[in-house]
Image 1 (cartoon, rainbow, N blue to C red):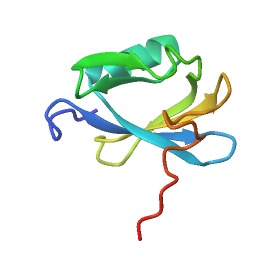
Image 2 (cartoon, rainbow, N blue to C red):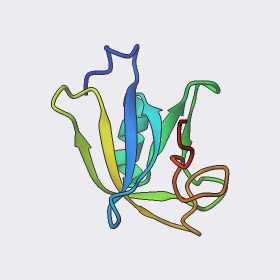
Image 3 (tube, helix red, strand yellow):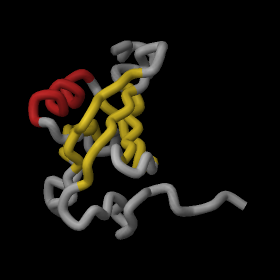
Length: 103
């Protein structure tokens, strides 16, 4: 992965493997990507907290990795996942973070 383009980070798009719905976007550094690969659950790097966090760590709504892919420039990760817990991915209580239409 090319972590240099975005100052040590790459965008990570999370997509439901069964429905193809885009669930959320976060950022990964090399350690978050390594942890994701080791544990099988999506782990991000929080830009505000400057720390790793596994999605669903506290809520139980974890994202189990089915496949990890990269784009042709190797600067973006696509995580195809299976939702666990109650399946709500967004902190606002929805399946996807992408619910607000831009007017």
